[in-house]
Length: 335
Image (cartoon, rainbow, N blue to C red; front, side, top):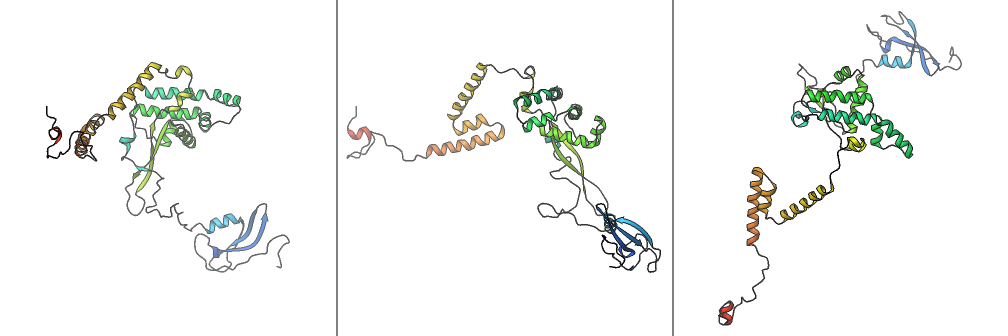
């Protein structure tokens, strides 16, 4: 095409169409030259914001990405569909597996026992301090760390500080722990993303059980009626921690005679329960009103089973004789 430099794409020209006031529209832009500069495609354009054709031209060089963003600035995109293919009815910004706040907390939270939070923190601090020994043992054995060992190796001071703050809240608030990420970031002195990573690691190790929550929002007009709120956390002591603690922090082993007595007690209890009737079994194993109901049901089944005899065996000396007399009388064996 005449006027086109070698090595460049052909010039693309367009006439100015209808003009609108305010922001430039696609009809107000004349593309006069395209150039490849580096890895970006840049265009020399002319803006014609005036009312007449080609009036008030202004030359500028913009990238194609900037032009695309300018052209699509007022475009509204459809919401991405869910995995199941259904459309969200309200469009509320609520995360998956969230439960409404105020409906489950009484059953979710647990009041810690006296000294329980201190024991959890002491064991967690010992576990974090022993990472160097764990890393050396894995290197000495010449193997790759397991998933649990890899999580322990990431259990640093930052994660320990977040756990300490959660345990403090659990001790003060009687186990009701639901701080926001901003609150934890301010108290611990860390960033929001660091707090998120620490909470995820604590949940992976089993020190924390978290539950997402949402709450209702009172608004006027059309819009979502729900809003995401802070998560609820329950503090736990993982059972696997004792295996990674020093010997002096582990509980003392149970004596062998105590273990044997417990085995004998379980065997005798099992044999005793097997010899009971249904009514007695219900009274021995179930308490309260339910136990009484099951006992009445078991008594009815026991009575029905005792009355029903399938293929009974006759007595040896009980039969009908020729003179229509039964038993020993019919045989003439009366003493």
